[in-house]
Amino acid sequence: MLYSLAIKNILASKSRTLTIFLLSMFTTAFFIVYVAYTDGSHEQMIKSSVEIYTGYAHINTKGYQEESDYDHLIEDAKQVETFLKQKPFVSNFSPRFETYVLLSQKEKTVGSMLSGIIPSRESSLSRLKSALIKGSYLEDNDTRAIYLGSDLAKRLSVDVGDEIAMIGSSLDYSTAADLFVVKGIFRTGLFDFDLSSAFVNKDYLDSIMMSENKASYFVLDFDDNQAADSYTKILSKSLPSSYEALSWQALLSALVQLMQVDSLFGYISISVFFIVIFFVIMIFSYVNIYSRVRQIGLLRALGLTSKDIRILLFNELLIITLVSVSLGAVIGAAATYYLEVYPITISGLADTYKEYGIVSDTIPTHFDAFTIAWNTFSIFILNLSSIFYPIYKINKLSVTEAMRYV
Amino acid sequence: MKLINISKTFFPDSPKEVKALVNINLTFEEGEFTTLSGESGSGKTTLLNIIGGLERASSGSIFLDNLELTALSDEQMADFRLRHIGFVFQAYNLISVLTVRENIGFIMKLLRFDEVEIDSRIDELAVILQIEDILDKFPGQISGGQQQRVAVARAVASRPKLILADEPTANLDSKNSERLMHMLRTLNEKEHVTVIFASHDRYVLDQSRRIIVLEDGAVIEDH
Image (cartoon, rainbow over all chains, first blue to last red; front, side, top):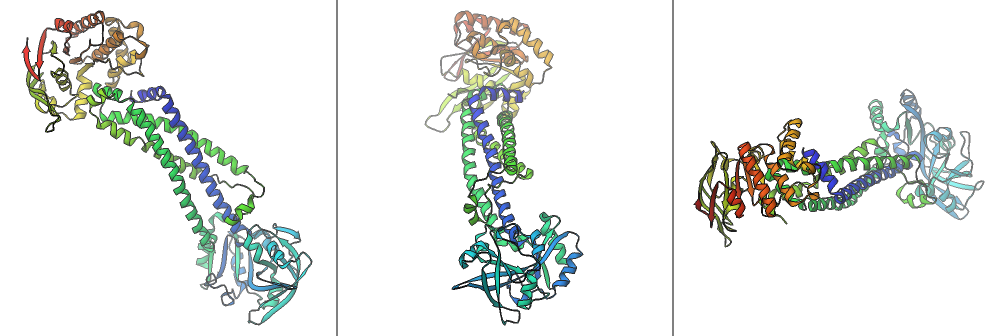
């Protein structure tokens, strides 16, 4: 009977019902899309940072992350290769040798991170090959070819085919120098990376730097990169004690913290919006309930208890909220899914995004059923909690006070 | 029903203190048709509300059979009202979102009467109270006289022991007042339900078998 009365009250108070219904529905849909966008942005930041160059995991000697110098190099790269080949969940890997050098062309000299890579293996571990914008990508038998970031090339005022000089320090700390020809120019969109990175064939760089069978670290891909953290823990347990395996979360801890802080501030911002919605719904419920004080007084006079009144009023909001939040969830989920499959692309957006570490012209959204479920549940609970104060106030009135209420 | 030393003071120990009832001692027998009478402010509505458990007495006790009503909690009193008391108010007080049929059957449904029994009782009362034609209408669609008859039907539908009616004819014209009183009297005789009015309407007083007159919260006449 109370349930049926609740439905009749809902249908009778059309304006209140419609207002709460629309508010709840749009809040739910908005929250889902907002969180999907935030998560999508973070995912894109991770993808940009991880997939462009860093990779999902590294193996390096202990201490290399703190001091990336020649004293912390992998001394026997072949041993690590053999070890990794025995791990079925490691789908790809490649050694890298990184060193800081000076690159010079005519009167211009620029400091750069020069990396020795195995070009064929890198093409599946990073986006270096696909970032090519001019010339051609490196090959495994290249010798004096260098692959430059677009902004570095610009600073050096060089183009494909130009010659540049390199001067650096070999492993015995003697001076290493050579001339390279620009074979290709790449642009990843990561400004700092494009401004400071240069790549050459590792075998050739090893011969100059005296770093044969050595590596700064190995970069790894797994059969399931989502499980990178678990896999690196497995690898760490079986690696020789002087080595460590680190997942992207550990390698990019600053980025992870930045995303956590960003999420926190995002939730704080949106909670202000929710508080407004909460109070709007509470005020509407309050006004609606007080417009029915006499009816509530009558129901109590007829024999309904305060508990029955609480159930009646709670049921009214529960029904509206259940329907509106469910519909909002469906709309929000559908919009999120659509935007993930068909993201909105705005030409030139990457320039705006690049300061956030995102390399894309699309607005990223991430569809995740679990996230949508907890978003929906949060709004549901928030809406329901808005009825408690009006119920408390109405039940404080005595039956006769309520029946005489004007 | 026995009322022993019932007193009611509003705003006690404050400058606005009002002694609405002072040491009321009364006994109501089953099947009575009684009116509490008196001028405005004499305390008749307050007494009716205390009998019905809508208000708490400041002191004194009320017993129905061997049950002390004044000792019941709010929740227990609400349940007691639901099961044993029917109310008819001055301002009709029907539930606006329910049809006449639903209003009449409301308490029976809360008491989980069988649907067939509810329908049969509604139809029976509709004939007695001459409201058969408006059963599917909402309170806002019927006249004041009809609304008061519906309120009576709701009050008696679940066959309570006691009907409390506060100025039931105050908003009715003489014809509707007569009709209402006639119907209440019929129900009183047919169903042996105890009816207590609070009213100063001459016609209601004429129809009553017992009249209790209150003045300044005290019983000054009982005949």
